[in-house]
Length: 341
Image 1 (cartoon, rainbow, N blue to C red):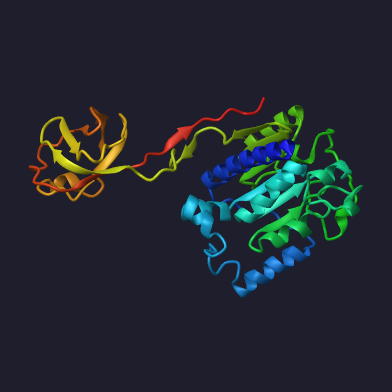
Image 2 (cartoon, helix red, strand yellow):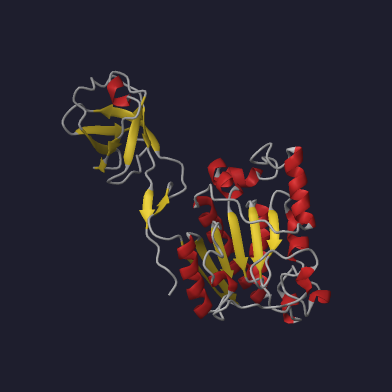
């Protein structure tokens, strides 16, 4: 009904935001800690590595063809190196965990030691009637791991350690020495690219935000309540976005480029440049002004009309004969996020 459609809309908002964070996250973090005892999924992953299946090709282009078309190879490589901790396997958390597994993150750790209730069965695909009374994460590995053999899935117990096979039946909730959650311990969430909190109350979410900042992990918090939903993203301070828009670089054919102290580039009437003051461009194939197209040379522009741009000094670049185009050079943007307080 309407509630289901609204919940689906909220889930899509959460997943879209999370995918954006993961795609923009820095790669190359240290490998996550491995459990002393390995589960079936761990053994399958290790066997694929030995056979070359897990590392022979960093991207399974057949499996991720749609994502590669939408996001590009760099974003998929970033996803493929991301280690994610997901806290909260509510109905929303179950959907997010599914989409993270299908997206192809390197490792997905989940934790929710709350006892599964009958009400949970109406919203979580991870749970079955026989799971009522056990921890929500009890069967998470067995039901998430088959979705994508390239993703290592682990369930973490109440002490934050990976559960050994068969240990997930008890819904134990172990607190730290100070009565806090296990993820509040120093170093407990080090090594994660992103921490995702689903339907977490305000007070523990504020503490998780502080812990994520201390560990260098990005935080995505999301919640869904009937017709309403919300997303909070904290990527820390000085977070560099390499492509602020995600759109292809603008380009236009040239009608003329003047030579002077304040050169003006004019595009053909059929192609307005679509640029703004401060955008950066390079020139290609301009006959008679080869110096304008020198490798590595760029120009910060000032838009003076739909088809005209002031590009700065062009003296000594020759005289325009014809042809050529200008191409936008995307510039990284540095963003400062605020913590959840």
